Amino acid sequence: CSCPPAAASSVLPTRLPDDMPVMSATHAMAGPSASASAARVTPSRRVCSLSVRAQAASTAESTGDIRDQAARRAPMEKAHLFNAKFVPFSYVASPKSKLDEEYNLDEIVYRAKDGGLLDVYHDMESLAIYGPTYWKALFDERAGRTTWPYGSGVWSKKEWVLPTIPDEHIVSMFEGNSNLFWAERFGRESLGMSDLWVKQCGNSHTGSFKDLGMTALVSQVNHIRNIRPGTISAVGCASTGDTSAALSAYCAAADIPSIVFLPADKISLAQLVQPIANGACVLSIDTDFDGCMKLIREVTAETPIYLANSMNSLRLEGQKTAAIEILQQFDWEVPDWVIIPGGNLGNVYAFYKGFQMAKDLGLVTSIPRMVVAQAQNANPLYKAFQNSYQNFEAVKASTTFASAIQIGDPVSIDRAILALKASNGIVEEASEEELMDAAARADLTGMFNCPHTGVALAALTKLRDRGVIGKTDRTVVVSTAHGLKFTQSKVAYHAKEIPGMASTYANPPTP
Image (cartoon, rainbow, N blue to C red; front, side, top):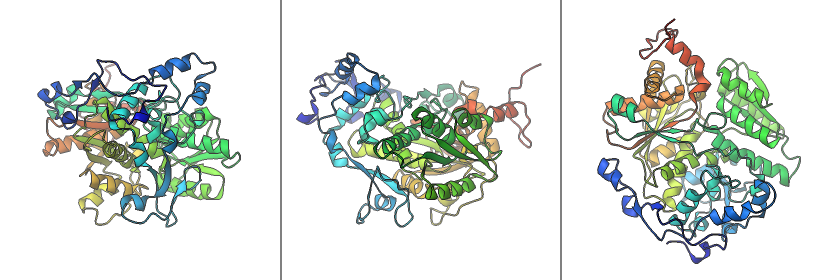
């Protein structure tokens, strides 16, 4: 066991079940072949001085609800050393530079002094006090339980997200823990692949991956409102649909007013009705997402309304846990490729951050190559990639069925480029017909994909055709939203009502 003596907390038994599989270091880079699959895990009888089952048993005997129990629970012995703060993203991008600007997470600040983005920076030395075996076992033991707040896929990794927030201030719907779907038939029949997986982030409370980030942001807002009442009157965002749904739901759960700016007639009815149902103040603006983003920046700069867009780096702390969760679901093996639909590009950096954090703390020895998939009608990152990032130019995004990534001037462009360079990543694009065909083709094998997942699947198809991604490469496609939020486009596709589109895989009903 690599845990220091301090890790053997009085509330944690000294052993995990004897039959619990544990990754050996030699298998950390095992490939996806059948022989490697057979040797992915090796049993170990002495795992780590860690289990929260005793903790769960003790709290079960306590009075009060699960939040009350959390307030009485003893923390990890060294938890007081864990810390995170805001620093300029420029420092993260150039860590050898001098850090002369930092902010407490309880401060309301969105930009560095030079106007650049901020990043949440963790005290990695303190986290490293507990060895990789400890963290693996801790995360595995917490996942999917009802112990507050650790049953959440995000808050099961609380020490890596927002380590100093009190458990009782967390706003959670036990998000995360989304299934990793083995796309066996689609991979075999359409791509000749044996190890293709789809991370179903849309199988979440509001139907998109945005829940992962919003639980972190709204929890921090709730914490600030508790320690400094009157500081924040409401939380606001500009949205292409999914962000507003997540924000309104989490604010409703915490009894915090929410305000959303939506581009008129540019999101699906399912996306529009969610914030309305959750009681948000919904403003339908005659502009695109970039116009809504400009307005919400002005509003939050002049009023006590807290900005919830991905410019706010708190959301990325929650979103990065999906990457850690993928590693966890593969018994801490690293996939070869991860393909992510890209719009505002915060999620790309969040996944990179999760993978890199796991590597830095010794849980894995490498990170996957990352692919950003953009709709051809909103592809500024793809164009920058084509010229080796020599220059980036925003574009006027055209209408795309992948409406959540219909963004021509992404806030997180610098974050995404850092992630791609660090992971030897690639950017690919998909036309409207390619993305709709890819989604429909995969649906015929049992999935039900949103158009954004269609963009990622179309990008995968192109990379397979060119031989960039091998037939045995373990590949994860990140599905960012649930297909039920985009039924209008699916109905139009199968009815062959989309002008200029052949709808090759349409399956219209027979009257």
